[in-house]
Image: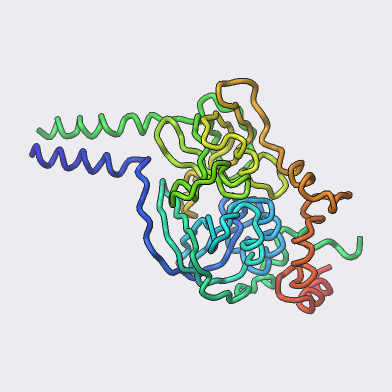
Length: 150
Length: 188
């Protein structure tokens, strides 16, 4: 029983916060998203703040330095910290030009305190915008396209 | 023995369960579904450095994503947003305190359904050693200094040269100018 107790205590210690995870090589396919709108709900439901409907807002948030995510097909979000040699993930051009695009990425995954971070070594392919959801949601937010009548 | 085991569990779990970072917070609500006020002391860290060991002295000069390594429990919080309602992040606000210990106040987002854990909107910063709270709202001023050629009326995101260039070629929807034209004709 003493061994069991020690094992459980050791398990608790390992499960606690502050234990940096080791990197794992992964390949993942997903959409480059604006994580603030996705997580906060400030602009609408998660399905509305991705794809072509949200392309312009995704550009604004990426250029504004908000963390960019890679939303995988299974719904997992990976926070992108670097793409190739470009570590300018806070407002840099590489990620800005991929806003709302679906990409196949190869990189290192780091998990820490409930979030997944990815350092992308290579964008294997850029499939452009595949989630054409503007007919379902319009442009989100509505002011993302200036009203031509004003 | 079972009683001892239970006590051991309780002893380990108690310090974590007792953490309430909303106590003392003066954060303003943004009326977000998953927001929780939170103030805490933390070290500002460069996330790429933290994970890979690639560590420039200036934490990337505001161009790398930064985290807040919380003193109380060593949890790494992702600094996602500054206090401006203007599509602006937090790295520029935190970078001056690279690798230093500060106290922040703001809103934590906690939405397990979406996987939002330990993501944070920074509203104010108390610098190392104490002092008055500094508003985390310098991003637009910093952008204006970097883009004197884009000076003018209207919000920064309508004037940013790279955003304008991308929209001019790919359209607002990102699908080309013809798609934009048809969408605008149908919806405006």
